[in-house]
Amino acid sequence: MSKQQTSVEEAREVLEALGYEVWEEDGDLQAERRLAGLIYRVYYGPEGDLRLEKVRLKPEEVREAMLAEHNGQFVRSKEVRESFFTACQPGELLELIKAWEA
Image (cartoon, rainbow, N blue to C red):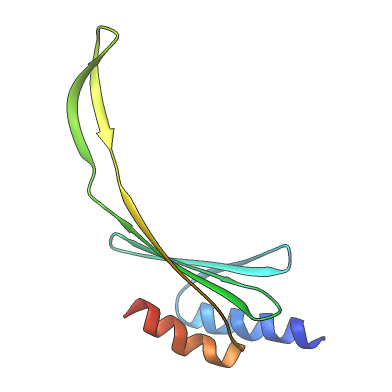
């Protein structure tokens, strides 16, 4: 097993231990965990490139509306997306994710 494959496997173990759903796409790891109005996403490449995302879902706004003389409902939802980019070794992943989620 190459060093890059070992790094990806170590990162997978950390993410799964934290309760993330993990999958591989084009050699990169992607992971997601949902918690009460928050979505945490992790993108980790074999070279150690890391992107952390936090998506906050705001409550939907629903109101009655008319469109071309048709009654209906207008629904607006908002999300706030925060991202952090860095490079790290798999052994540093746990510390970074815990800090990001705090």
